[in-house]
Structures are given as C-alpha cells and as structure tokens.
Image 1 (tube, rainbow, N blue to C red):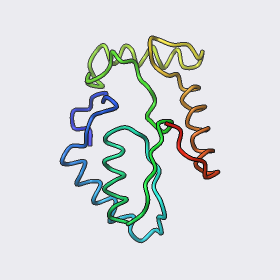
Image 2 (cartoon, rainbow, N blue to C red):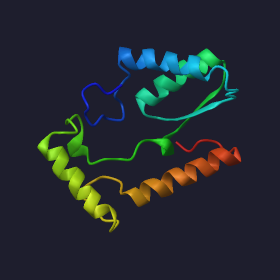
Image 3 (cartoon, rainbow, N blue to C red):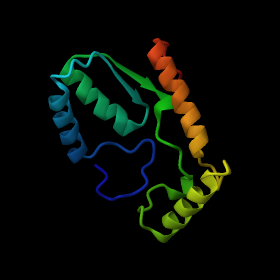
Length: 130
C-alpha cells in the first residue's frame, strides 16, 4: 500500500495497511496449494512474504535479483506526480527504447535480463544469488 504514491526506497517498510493486506493475501492464497514463496530482498517484499509464508506454513527464499526495477536515486521519496518525477519518467520512457540511461537507473532491457535469469535459477531449483 503506497498511500503517498511516492518512489519508495529498497528499505521502505510495510505500513500497517500493507501488513493488513499481506494477511488478507495469505488468507486468499490458503486454498491454492502454495508450497514455497520466493521474494525480493526489498524490506516490504520480505515483510509481506514472511507474513504469507508463516500463515501458510511454507518456506521462504529471498533473491536480490527479484528486486524492483532500479529507478534513478534522485526520485527516492518523490511523489509520482512531482514535476521532477514526471520529467525523469518521461526521459526514461524515451530512452528506454535506446537502452540508454538517464543516471544510475536500470533500463528495461537490463531489468528483463536480470529477472529472467533469476526466474530461470528459481525454476531450476538453484540457490538464490545475493
């Protein structure tokens, strides 16, 4: 639950609303035969996955390679609708097709390559790469 509609940092914790939503997710998944959970190392993702895994009684694995797409650090904590955020998002959209970079972000091609490799490792049963 991102009530502020802001670009969140990797270490942003779940809000009380997010914890409530994680418990509701666990209840909704309880009849689906989940046998294990894979998550990114983002704090809120690990917190969500931990709540769900405990509720379902299943193991949990964390993978750095499953983190969200890395956005420019200058966007951290800015609203999605802040003029600077909108400007940079527009640049990233335009640069995305060229595989270029605005600053320290990950372009869509790098994101796809990273997560594709991570999912292949998970599917093959390989250990997480931290």
